[in-house]
Image (cartoon, rainbow, N blue to C red; front, side, top):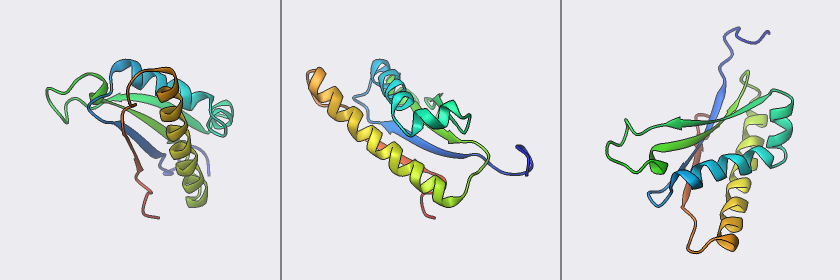
Length: 120
């Protein structure tokens, strides 16, 4: 099946809590782009990592809180591949939080990681 033949991309959304600022959102995206196996998926063109504005969902929220990092698995790969990607993203987010805690004062923002195929 060729790309675009009715196979939906699957998304994993990472949302940071209200303590997050623009700097946190950008740093998290850059961290995810460097973490294996995410970096490998990006190189092979199987993944995209995007920032999406969601302030229209929550009017009046701070900029960082109104933005989410979205990891897109292109071409709707098998459920097993999506589950592996979900685990990799969750581990990468925890690693980013631990790193941020060690290099900056204060606690890092809490993160929610979820996706459309979470319940598979």
